[in-house]
Image (cartoon, rainbow over all chains, first blue to last red; front, top):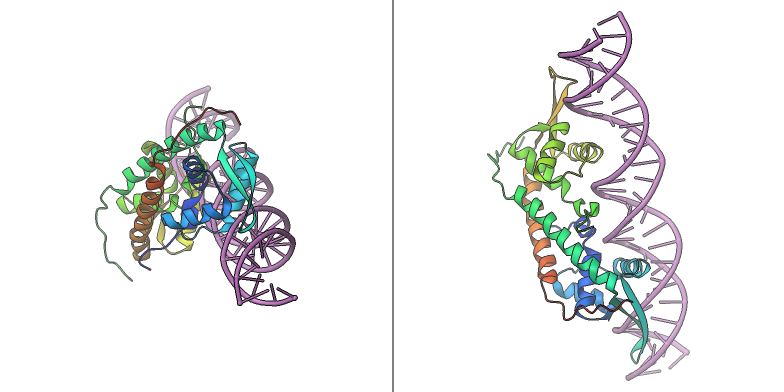
Length: 118
Length: 118
DNA sequence: AATTACTACTTGACTTTGCCTGGTACCTGA
DNA sequence: TCAGGTACCAGGCAAAGTCAAGTAGTAATT
């Protein structure tokens, strides 16, 4: 195991990521999944994104509009609301502060790393 | 609220933090809570730490030993095992990679921040 | 001796949120 | 009409932090 992927690390950050991506460019669920994969989050599948988007809409942070497509069913385009932009700002600040604290701890040297296997 | 504290952000990172702190210095639950608060994680209470510690022990990443105290009940000192040190290394790598991706997205400029209320 | 207070650990119910599986439906092209 | 890609949704599950309450041990105060 050279590097794993801990799904838990996504908690709380996903909605922030979604908000940011939608602020960059309005888009629909299916596309968001592809954008996430393009960024390196290949493990984030539809079953994760759609509920998250629905949650954001329910909370009033994004609005949706249906746009019919010529290549399949109608797409539901999402875009942040004013509240969404506000949440993006405070959320980013929280994230920054949080990672700063975690990194401060994790970069401290560990005295010895004894190879006491067994 | 200028900046909130999202409890979800702790998910997945707490055990890593714990592992690192215990690698720095062997300690017991109650003390770990105080060390976390000293670092800036004031919202992490006993009910969060003890279960996390128990989980780490159950997973074989830390070992515990009881030491009687002269100022209260016996303390349960935890220390990482070899597997714990390994988990610390891979976990830190995963965390670093994860935050790099998230930051890459979050630092991208957002076109406009219209004040359009819904 | 009894009360109080601080230390220290434990437990269980609750909530959030991501994961997984599978289902529906639209559209195009063979 | 059937296959396949696009697009969305729903239900149930699991992981992990939160909260509140409970149990004890020790020591100082009364």
